[in-house]
View 1 (tube, rainbow, N blue to C red):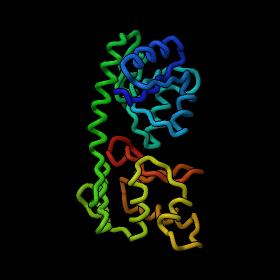
View 2 (view 1 turned 30 degrees about the vertical axis):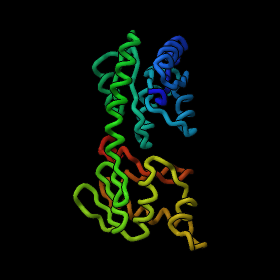
View 3 (view 1 turned 90 degrees about the vertical axis):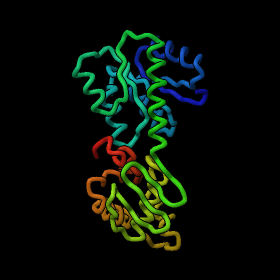
View 4 (view 1 turned 120 degrees about the horizontal axis):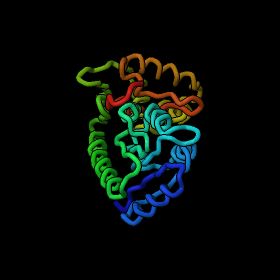
Length: 239
């Protein structure tokens, strides 16, 4: 567990520091954030966390809203809510927006540690479900065959052009990573100097149309570029 990195998000400093102290003693790497906005800033900066412990009621963006935003962007980092909101409706909301577990305040440190380890163990299965070898890349229900340049979703082969395949291959090779249009052009059209960024948009629009209900696998981050939305491929979250 020495390399496991946690992000603890709570607007109560005493809770952040208590959890930080105990998890660091357990060998975890720990960062804290006092608000949803600060947490989002850390996540968008490119820092990768293995799990997020997240308060629900905070000033500004709530834990539920933060989680919903992360899931819609394709971020599947495990999230455990730690909160005093303990009604059945709160519990249902927490899971519906993409939470992995729910701990009520007041809590024992032993309980939190046990829940964190259990969720991380489940996450190891999730990572093993992403398969990448010399023959194909499979993320959830989406599978691309590298030599034959075929796209298969569930058990159906989806006809795609060579260019559409190369665009999809670039995205699926690094799920959730955002690729700028210029980066896509450089890799997919390496020997052509007059390809417009609009050309990328056209090919992706055609590809998304062919993917049907899985069109949300290709996510457009306005002002940034495109990414492969791993969450949709696993059928866990809607577009």
